[in-house]
Image (cartoon, rainbow, N blue to C red; front, side, top):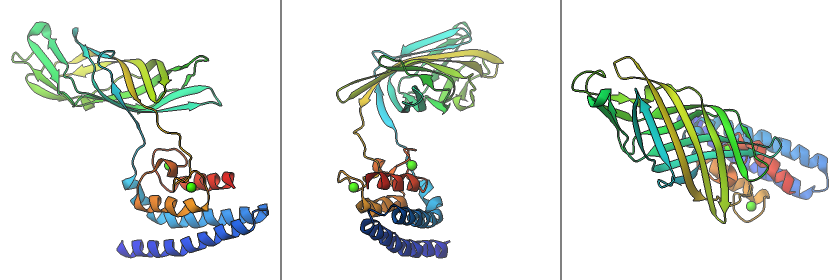
Length: 304
Ligand SMILES: [Ca+2]
Ligand SMILES: [Ca+2]
């Protein structure tokens, strides 16, 4: 393995020299489209052969790009019903989510969501003979697969998104001295299956540097604590606030305000060190890897 890695680094040095030559050729033949296309083809090939060897290493260091938001507990709530026992409380904690909008199709979509609740939920079950509590800071709601994108409204930014698969995680501590619900136990919520859920009226507003997102989701399914399947419903309504990310010039990895051959070396450094930089994530996938090379070269071409 070490031999392969050393060989990869040696190839990388050789390829970087050849890539530099391509850049020089591009600079000298700015008015020759054929020469530029030829140089770019060679660059893409070299970058691909270089990075394929290191791709497996890079993937393990890739970081997700997310928008961190804070739930406003004064405007958010979570309601849980299990076997006719209802628990309601303000929802506080943190949300990370990724949003996309597609101007061509006029749709918006939540592509990733993670809600971490830092308040416990307490339920009385079986007429008060049993009870259950989540652990503060432990219970989470996550998006497993995004549902169908929703149509963006003509006025303001809002959409509804249907058929999302959501999952729970964390523990539910059950206190059941009489054995109505399977006895005292700690129930792993990650085993709970829920029917596809719908995000209703996802509203996005922006004032200056502040972004606010609010929506509601209802999840229905069953929970088996050891006494058979119990109907369970979770509804969460949330308002979350965060800072609008700065506009990003994709490909401007050295952050000098333009995309040009001076960005090639910094781009490759991000690739081979397995780091993350928004400007290097040229295909906006949330991580920097060999799949960004084509988009990076496209950005270079667009700026020429
Ligand atoms: Ca630059
Ligand atoms: Ca990427």
